[in-house]
Amino acid sequence: MPKQTFFNLPAQKRKTLMEAAGKEFARVPLSGASIANIIKSAKIPRGSFYQYFENKEDLYYFLLGEQTKERKMNFISLLKKHNGDIVEATIEMYYDFLKQMPDEDEQKFLKNAMLHVTHKVENAFTDVFDIGDGKEHLEEITALVNKERLNIRDDKDIFHIMQIVTTVAFRNFVEKFSKELSDEEAIENFNKEMDLLKHGLYRRE
Image (tube, rainbow, N blue to C red; front, side, top):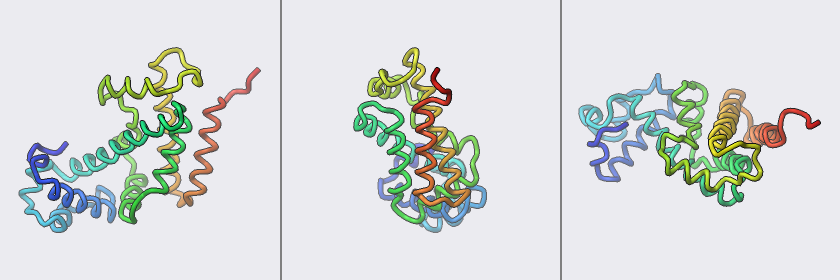
């Protein structure tokens, strides 16, 4: 997490630093990223950087975390739109994520993240339903879910369903970039896997 001095900065200065970081992490993966390039682009002294962040990893995961917050808000909107259908909301979120990446830098940033996956990177992308956000967030999601359509015993099962669905989505993102699939191919594969989850893996007797 950034230090308090980062949050004390004017909004425009925070935005400039985040944009500089986004460009550098789009150019190369985290391991090859240079703090020198980030501070040069952001036009800040190196000493100032360390007043805001511990290191480049701190900045990188903060940037991923900020993107996750946006996906969480989008997912809540999609749950409402699809009358609490978790699978349909996730399918549309996946589609939007592919189709609405605003620029080339963001695509490169995502590609670098997906092709150099660590457990921490995976967590950043799949924490759409993170109970670590607190009881209120969990209750908000649970209240929106259409439980009549799910094979669950209690509300706790909803969390595990979300973990399964978001993990499948993440694996598909990795496959899209590693195999250089088109958006259409990636969406087709994801839809097939979501359909299998929706209807079950076992034949009904």
